[in-house]
Length: 210
Ligand code: AMP
Image (cartoon, rainbow, N blue to C red; front, side, top):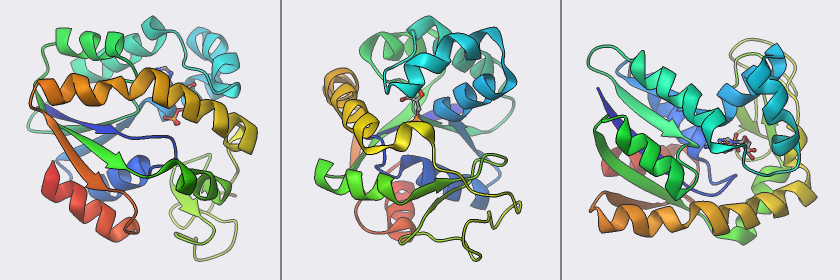
């Protein structure tokens, strides 16, 4: 097994890219730290209870909390799979945790989208609470408005997708996560793609780069 890290701001489309590629190739496994955490919150686990407040305010949850979950997922990976790691690492300390697992990182792909575009993207974002599929009212609408194509559940707006929290999440991204661009560039692992080409072309560009 090996790992491809998706780097990018909230709303850059990395989750959509990872889900699309994983749906088309059984060897690619999409692992979203945000989905793991939202699952823990929904299940009311101890980790979920701890994470909830941080997530709702747009802050990062404590490193140990998410690192434990990601280490478990990596340890349980079997066979010839490539993990598309979406949302982890989010800071240098987490990148060091990932390194220490010994799992080989094939590449780190930065999905580049200007901040001005992000607010619009997130304003139209809709999410399936059941199967986690992501949609956008204009760029990637479901076949029936408000209903998930994949599982038929009613789509929701994520609590942390309101404009105020999005601003805070972008600040956190630039302060905590963006330093990873240099961190991985120095290791010769970084690739970049233009994340503003629409869902199909973004996914194709990512696949070519990874
Ligand atoms: P995401 O779905 O990736 O946008 O993540 C949603 C929220 O979950 C973030 O705003 C953070 O509060 C939390 N989160 C996700 N991944 C991490 C991580 N690697 N480290 C800390 N917090 C995280």
